[in-house]
Image (cartoon, rainbow, N blue to C red; front, side, top):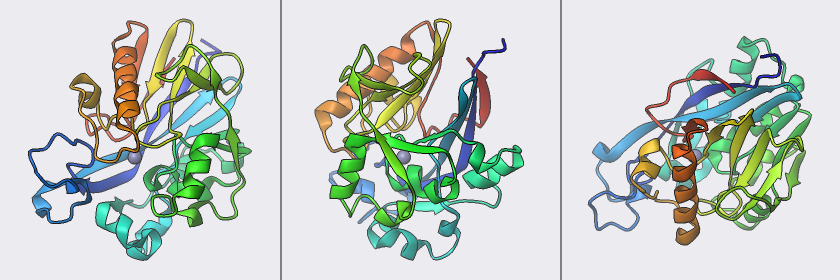
Length: 274
Ligand SMILES: [Zn+2]
């Protein structure tokens, strides 16, 4: 068991949005229902915002960072009025990523890698809270997309942070058959799962023929892939369907220990041993 891998599923607060953002199968004729514009408050929903701490024999790896503590102040100013219209951050004391690592006795500088599945605000907002990590990585495709889309992506979140990129190469993994192998031993694979964003990656953590799939925002809950429910924010619908289909197949695989959507209300913080 010594070389087992431990995954801590952490909730770094919640995100509040219109229900049409996570689940775009709502009975509405409003094509921008997911923004909450012209929609009743009764459609507002709170979803957890997950981050994952992986204790791996080769190092400590954090996947996603959740909200920055600055959202506790003037949130509208922090995220701008468009983002503030679409989603609100909820971050109780003690739930920011640095606060949780601290209470686990982990120093930020102990983190060997921080992997950002994609650079949306609820995943990358906390990046400055972990900037002393040894390596902060996202896919080169996501990084390029973020530079080109200043409305969707808040550039100030990573100001002064040394973000490096990884390239995905052709592999057996994912709908695009492209991935990046973090340690070069097949144990942590960042898999290209575009659709929600251009360069999003899901993370496969595997050992001795069993795996856990951290599905990022391919779907907002297990029911997304079980019932093939797309979400409201999509840059490429065909790719979003292919990515969700791939997650569905992986989740059904008998070798799969757990498949986790980042924002699934049915998932509580817990620890998984791979
Ligand atoms: Zn998200």
